[in-house]
Image (cartoon, rainbow, N blue to C red; front, side, top):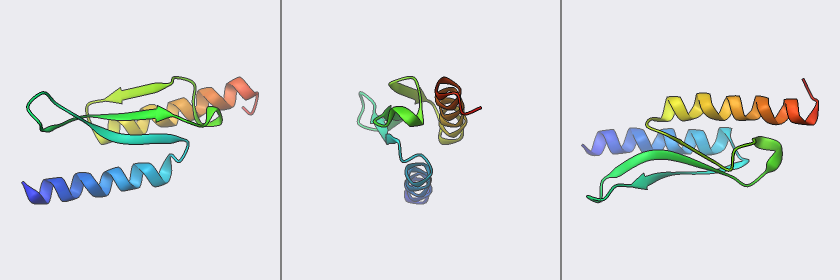
Length: 78
């Protein structure tokens, strides 16, 4: 279990370094275990939706890339 948590912590660090316009963390479930992967927008240039919630790191990464594209389109950068 510790190895899994270490891998998830590394993935969390990678997401945070890749998507600096968001605050990224893991939610905590009712039973105290780690739950969904969450990103809150703090730089409007990085996305559109204020909060993005996904069940795993890779899905969150894809969603945040989509958010970046939406933000670029809104700015007219496309």
